[in-house]
Image (cartoon, rainbow, N blue to C red; front, side):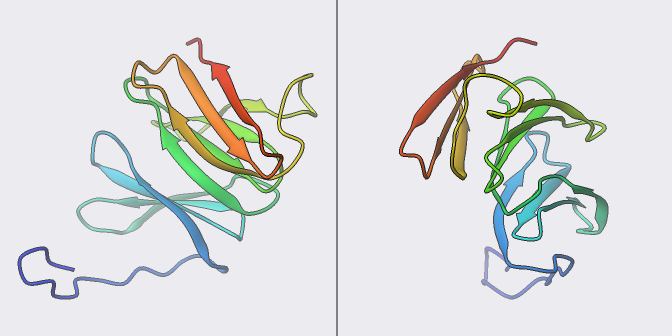
Amino acid sequence: YNSLDYGFQRQLAGHKLPITSLQYDPSGTYFVSGSRDAQLKFWNLPGYDLQNQIGAHMFSIYSIAFHPSAPYFATCSQDKSIKLWNAEDFKLYKILSLEKQTEGHFHSINKLMWSKDGQYLISTGDDRQVMIWRFQQ
């Protein structure tokens, strides 16, 4: 929609199941959508064309959070994992899950956020836990 007159601008299609998360990258050159189809789709700006897509998780993606200053973003999922991605080439950087380490959520992870200084990633999920992860580049 156009913010001046709220006129419809464009509709994007690409996911096979409902979309559960959206996030602009900090540079404003693209945005990312996550879905119950476990896919991340990257849409360029200002053209809104599909730039890239990744089969990112095993189940629904619930949250996407860009690091405030480093070229990374995090995703979380019903599959009980948090994944860190390079925001420039979209390559997987790290997986945080009980399967990969001794600490982690044991149910679906629903929301992520970075601390303002970018040193901590905070997650919460269906296990009623808030977990704080220290991020080191």
